[in-house]
Length: 480
Image (cartoon, rainbow, N blue to C red):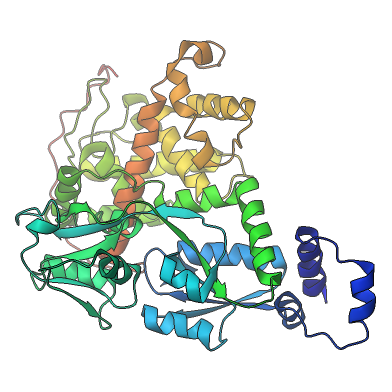
């Protein structure tokens, strides 16, 4: 079987050679099959995970999630089928491994001292810290002495182990098996409890949606995340995982997947996030119909178009920049004319023109560049121009980076502001750092809109047209 050959060839590459004498002796007896051999013969790797934004969730296009994509890479690496076994809480998760229902647990698990006594952890792939969180507006606790209220955490979590180690006196805390981390965050925001503890990666994702979730203090310093496997005398699966993660880092796939889920949420702006959420409720309904209509016409996700428009103008149809770009999609006068927009202050025309222009940029990105990188490059081109983007890609390539991967090129775009780099480019100086911020902000807004509206949301065919904005943009002599 091809899968068996693939796995065993990788396994033998990462273990030392066994002596000939040992092999001759072992041949006299029937040796039990290693876990790697069993996986190869069945042609399947069984991975247990947990439902959540950092692990595994379902979309209209299928399964997604950081841990899911890593597990998918493992299955491809071993040339076997991936069987995902998702559960809802940590107690169920560890039971999967205890009862041999899965081979691996991939669920953003902290490699705590207590867990290491029972399970074996593959090489760490991320570091996180644990944060005590509370609701914005309440008194901020700066250390344990300030805790005055109810603290609830998920049972069997690393947070429970942390609190047990701290052996805090006069602190009222309890565990629950009924609520996961996201539900406890909601409980804090709904004033049902006063505090909970959240891993920093989970917090980064949720604060895009819940800006009123605030950090009191850091409960623990950096902790390692890793995949867990059973503690056995069989090292074959562990050896394969060492080789797999080494390969994933070496070929850049880990960095790509990590950037996809976490690269754009590392910074948090409370005021901006709060304003965006308020605008979703009060402003977006005036223009959503047109975002949907023209996104469909030009084969764009309407939520991406809306996110881009918010980054451009905060959904203000009269917006104007110092350089003269105007309207809800902030079009230059030449671009507007090229896209058939007669008045840039007409919101519908501007959205149509912006959608058409973005679609044209997207189509001009080299065919070999796949999604989602293709979209991120098209957004960067909308902001900085295709010429400057190509200059940055050439710089990235000259520095040994992959010019077809956004997470690599975005490190080199700011070099367009440095003379020793831009003097050798075709299009010269450009504010490359602004293009990076532009794309990453749109990615955050887009993720929030996906959360608010769901993956399949569309308006009904009949909708109320937004009010028109009176145009003062008809002058052909208008400067850029």
